[in-house]
Image (cartoon, rainbow over all chains, first blue to last red):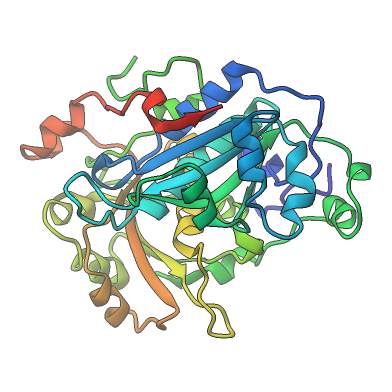
Length: 191
Length: 191
C-alpha cells in the first residue's frame, strides 16, 4: 500500500482512499478531452442550495495563453511545481445571483463541485491539487471577471509525475505519509 | 433508468450519477454504526487548505434529544420531511484557528468534506439531503457552540422512503427529473 493511501478505521471507496494532492506532474501528458469533460460533468451534477449551481471554471491547458496568465498569479512554492500539470483551472464561486442578491452557500457549494470533480478525475487516473495560494485580484483583472464571480481556488489536473522532479522541501513532502485528525475529534456531539 | 439519474454527455462514476437529495426517508430505518463511521472517514480524508481540516459535525440519531433540537431549527418545508431521516447532522466550519486567525477556505473545505461524505454514504445505499434553511444562531445557542464553529448546513442521512409519504408540492418534486445547466455554460474560459 502506498504511503499516500488513507488509513481508515473502516473501509471506504478505493477512489476516496487513494486520492491525494501531488506536486509532481508528468510534463509530457496532455489531458484526454473526454476525461476533462467527465470531470466537469461530475462537478455539474453535484448538489447546491436551491439548485443554484454557483460554480464556474476557467480551464487552461498547458501551453495556452490562459495557462501562463494563471501560473503568473501563483504564490510561493506553488509557482515552482504547478506549471508541470496538464491544466490549470480557476474555481469561481457565483457569489451573487442575477437579481443582485448574495448567494450564501456559493463557496460551500463550489467546494462540493470541485470535490465531485476530483473524485471523478481520480477514478480516471488523473490527479488534482487545489491551491489557495494565488492572487485572486490579479485573476479577476487578467480575465476581466464580473464582480459576481469570485476566484476561490486554483487547481492543477494531470498525470502523476516522479518525486525526483521536485526540489526540497517539496520532494520530501511528496513521499511523506498523509495525516489527518482522528475521526472522533471531528464529531463534537454524538447523540 | 430512474428519472433521478444524471444525464451526462460522457459517462461518470455510477455513484455520482445516481446520487440525489430525496425528501422521503424510511422512518423505520436505523443507521448501521459502521456506515455512519465510514461516511465520516470519507469526510476526514478530504483535502483542505494547508491540511487545516476545518470541519466538525454534530451527529444526532432520530429519537435523541439532539435530533429534536436540530429539527426545531429547520425552516419552512424542511421541518415537514426531515424528521423521517435516520440522522440529522449539523455541518460546522471552523472559521478561526487556535491563534484567532480567520480560516479563509473553511466553508469551501467543509463543502468538500460533506461531498466526500455523501458520495461514501450513497455507495452504501444511504441518501443525504443538505439544507441551508435552518436557524444557525439557534443551533449555536442550543449546543453552546464556540464562535469559531459556524453552522453552515444541516443534512439528513437515511434510507430512501416512498414519494407517497410526502404531501404536495414535495411529492411532485420527489419524482421530477433532476436538472442542471449545460456543462459548457459552466466553463467561462476554455483555452
